[in-house]
Each structure stands twice: as structure tokens, then as C-alpha cells.
Image (cartoon, rainbow, N blue to C red; front, side):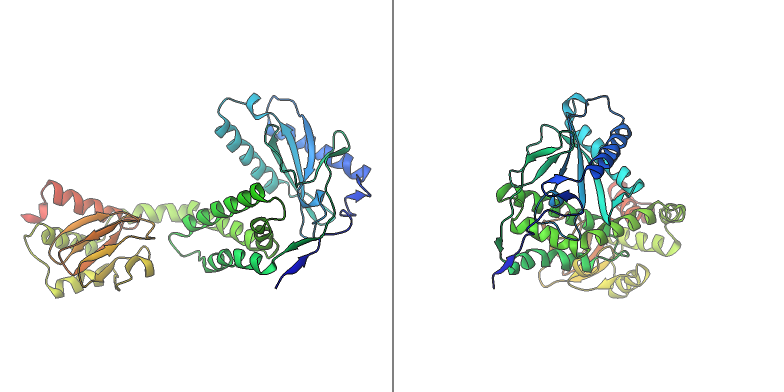
Length: 361
């Protein structure tokens, strides 16, 4: 069913009086922009200070931020545009986290925008320095398929709902979702503008709190990785305990054909590595050692985010890489994921097999 996406018939009255920004607010925002410019610590001229986004359009909501952009010429800051852009994004992040400014409940989000960046024609833009519209928005009723917006947003909702802090690959999954969301919004704005299905889906996720949840989980994971206890634990994990030394010895002798593993030997290895026997392997148990029973020796690495060392019951060993297919002569393949927990064991196995093993004595 097609529902109407009803824009407002006036600009946000908290910010605007008619088509002009409220004078005292303009002075206050320019004062904030000046402080932000000094915080940037760059020796270039400010070309303008603008308000863009939904707060400068008729599609504002109670969730809208005040997007306050300071326009400077990036090329005068440095020759390496990639580094300059990263620097500006880092400054934006530090400022907005350090100074969470609000006006009547609306977040004031600051950013140093490159003056050479092309602005979308559908986006209202107001110059605070000149106190006039650069691009005046239009109030119009837009027909948007609400079902299409929901369908576009639902896969992201599902993925964000499924994120778990205990997942060893949660950081990679968060970065993947964020990158896809950025591309989603960019594609929509470039194709059909502010009212594109893609941009509306992005705003839908923001309004429902999904983007904030993603941000907070990322912060929590990063803080957890940087605690002293975590670093110490990772260093201690580099030294194998006696049980894992025994596993390493057994696997090396098996691979070199000196002493093949019998079924009870494999059971011992599965027990001491806390492995799981499951044909879905890393799909179902990412980061854990797994025993894969197969009918033909085939292993797929599709959608596996990390390399895996595979050892079959005939002694064949292969380092398998994401998005590739592998065949083993044996029918059971023991998988050791190449993660921080298991990288020392993998290195010891590979070195022993490659250079000759002390275990062969």
C-alpha cells in the first residue's frame, strides 16, 4: 500500500521565523562555529558557515539534528586529500563526543566541509554568514512507498539485532554494516535526492535508534579490547598450555605420516580443543575449532571472514582462504581458525611440517 510521506508545511519553528533563522540562534551558532574552527587548528579561511539537512528542510522531525557545517577549502590544508578528509572526520568525532551541544533538545552536529564538495540540489542550505538561503527548500507532499522503505531497512535491523558483544568478529561485522549504510545513503542522495528510498531507509534506522545502538556497541567493543586485562590475556594466550602442545604434536605427526590419528586420537583432539563436530563449521561456530564430516571432501569458505587451517583424516593440510572452495582426499576435515586464539598453534604446526619436527624424534 502506498502511504503519503507528509512533509511539514512550515520550517521547524524552533529554528526559523518564517523563512529566516531566528536572530539570537544565528548569533549563537556562529559563536559555536568559531570555536569549532579554532578547534580544527588549520590555517585556512572560513568561506561560510551553513545549516543543511532536515533542519533546513520541510521534512524535519522531532529527531532532526542541527547540521552545522564550516566550509573550508581542503586543498589549502594539505595535498593529500585522503589524509585531510580523515583528519576532518576525526576532529568532527572528537568535538561532537567532547561537546554534545543541544538547542531545545536538538543535537548540534558540527563538521568541516570541503567547499569544493558538490551539494545536492534537493537539500536546503542556509548561509549563516550571509544570513540568506543558498538553496531554498520547497514544501511539497511527496509520495513514498512506506513498504519499500521498511523492506530496505529490515535487513539492517535484523543484522544489528543479531550483533553480540561476545562474537569474536563483531567488530568486523559492525564496520561492514556501517560501510554499507554509508553507501546506501550516498547512492540514494546521488540518484534521486533527499526523498530517495535509500535515504528514507537510513533515516528510518536512525529514528528507531539502530544507528545509536551500532555506535554504542562499537564503543563498548573497542573499550573492551583496550583494557589492560584483555591485553594481558591475549599475551598469555600466545603460550600454549600442555594440552594444546599435545594436540600440536599429534597433528604434526599425523600430517607428516609418522603416526596417523585413529578415531580415538581425533576424539582426544576434539575434546582438548573444545571443538564442535558440525558440517556447517565456521558458519555456525565462528572462531572455534570444528570437525567437518563430508561426503566428498569438499570445503567451502564462502562467507567465512578469516583463513582456516584444514587437516583431513588422511594427513593432508591446506590453509584455506575466504570466498574460495577446497577439496581434500579425506572425508573428515579438522578446521583450526586463523584467529588470535589459535594463531600460535597454527604457526607451530606449519613450521614443524615445513622444517622438520622435533616431534619426529
